[in-house]
Amino acid sequence: MPESTPRRSAYSRLLDKATRILAMRDHSEQELRRKLSAQPTFPGKPKPEENPFTPEDIEKVIAWCYEHRWLDDEQFASRFIASRGRKGYGPQRIRQELQSKGIARATGEAAMLNCEIDWQAMAREIAERKFGEPLPTEWKERAKVQRFLLYRGFFMEDIQDIYRNFAD
Image (cartoon, rainbow, N blue to C red):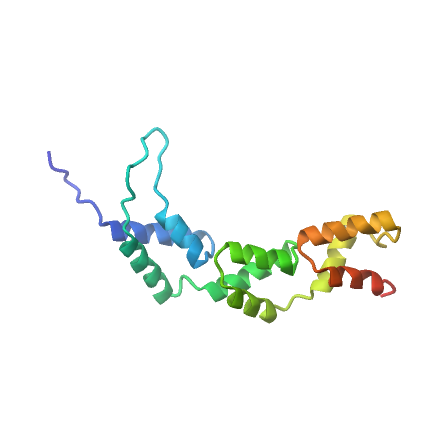
């Protein structure tokens, strides 16, 4: 028995999937490719044997997203840096996360140079929020502050400058 409703093409379904993904938040090209090539799974149904989307369809959708400026790795990098900076992460950790999201090193470095974040001031702010003001000066407590800020992705130079400029 023939179906009364025609099936949409794989390309149009893939384009819909891309628009839904990009409507939630910005993505890098690599993230979008990974999500588009993932096989759809539904609870209670067996996993399909092969992906209904061809690599050519994925390439066309990626090109369409670039053409309509829905996908831009440079813009993604600058927004990601601002977002992670607001959450209290330092430049080293942000660089690492950008690379894990598929952003080229040169693109990430350019975005880091263009951001207007004072990493030293941010490190001090986060340390004061976590450990109170004034910051601990006893060696054991000071090491705790350093470990915490290193974990958050700040450079040791910025962390040491907090204590050098302690009189500020």
